[in-house]
Image: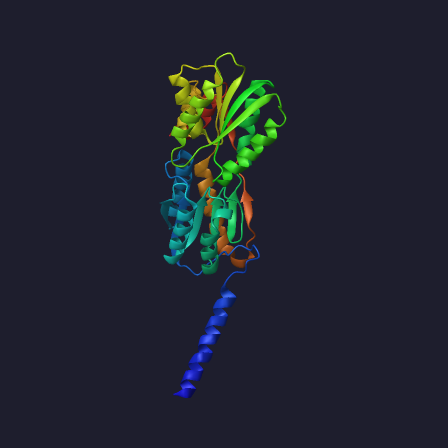
Length: 326
């Protein structure tokens, strides 16, 4: 009996040693090719009701289905704690991939650690790279540039801007950074910032615009409202319509079907169309490549270009991209 116990103890130590060797190191290498055999993509989204998040999920779902995978979606409603909990739950269920939509990797420490320990690859949509993340999309800063530059050009060097921000999401952080850089080139424009919440961004946009308009009556100079994505701007547009204000230009980013229609009817001055479905497909296909590549995979940022849509270009844009109105 003592000898048997000794054999079992040695076997246990060997098993622990092998398990320790199998845990990916924390040096930033992607933990592609985990031990899970479940062909399930666990998606945690910052807002399932946002049009572009929905497009990304649809793109992931289409590519996953074609490859024999299924999709499990959790709406964390802007709450990073819920996002971390969802990621740990995906790991416990043995999901083969985890996708983060918008939450910055810096706020997902617990979820990423759980995935890394289990060898489950993580991809982010605008959340940035980090230890254990095999790929991210570069849909933050690049998409902000065309709309913000268009706004500065339209203002002509003077006036006032209300900027509607959202700092809990990496995408909006990056876009606000681009906004700040471009606005620094136009010092004659006064900038006011307000941060919206998720959920509640439409209501916040309307509320902040109403308060801002009170201090910026008609004739007070060139005026504009900018949103780090267009939904808060659409909320602001409702306030403009209630007050019959046609003197304020409005700008957004993402190009949801509602936004494109708002450009068509003149309510929204400009937006930047983002092919969310295409990005979702790219996320799945790239992460599947990472799984197949194993330890040799190098994390990467994949860029999908945006398209500026204005009153002058919207007709041609809709001709070329009829799916944008769906």
